[in-house]
Length: 320
Image (cartoon, rainbow, N blue to C red; front, side, top):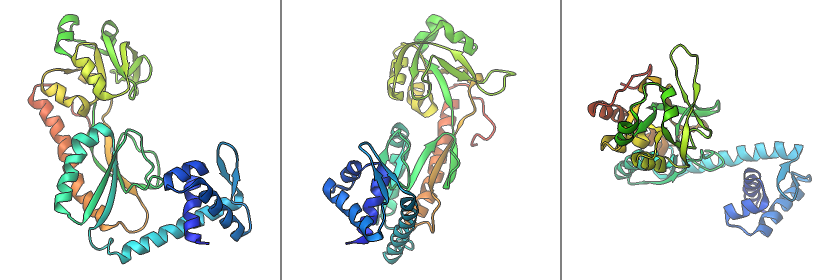
């Protein structure tokens, strides 16, 4: 029995939650996955997993064994990367993840520059609006927009992102420009469900602590920012999105940002990676290469808004 292979399969079963999911992820027959785990349990002389029809759970012995197996495999992986020179020369495969729209607009151009500068590094860019788990999904580095939960991850802050309300000039000409969030009650709205799932939008009102939820009248609810921006540009209603998501439409005059004095505090933008061991050169050089460029892009987003005359209230901590 190849114990390292069996350990790897066991960890994948635990991470994916079932034998069938591990089988699909590894590209290994289900019968092989089950046999390898059974052999490993026979070797250690105890049950490591409790199997049910829907999922698997670790026994007490399994919890201890899995923790040790992770440490062993991590140490082997690090040793092999050192032997391959990955910790001393920028080479190898770098796996990155970012939100779909932000990644396409702002991370992909940086990645293409990076590839030209470092020919011995290859990049897999996983664009997903779901926050991938860096360790379980084998991701080296991620772009995160929003507050970070407490974790062992190492975060490099690269800027801030506003959440804005915008509408088409045609809609505003017909209904008037809202002076306060209360005025939205008289306007149709296009709700981007990723930011606001109900029939209210949060705002920061004068003399109020924290965010205040204000009722809106959603004529259309959509699940992507691109759809919300397009519908708003067609005068279907006002919409609430992240600043970068509507930047092009604001730049070409299709949309106008409104209610700037009532915006919530901007969201932080970070590059994060797992804080384990020595950082490989491929990750070090990408962090050095990308952090400043992302900061510049976020600064340019603010500067461009000022150039076209859109009011912008600088919040404390906004990059200058």
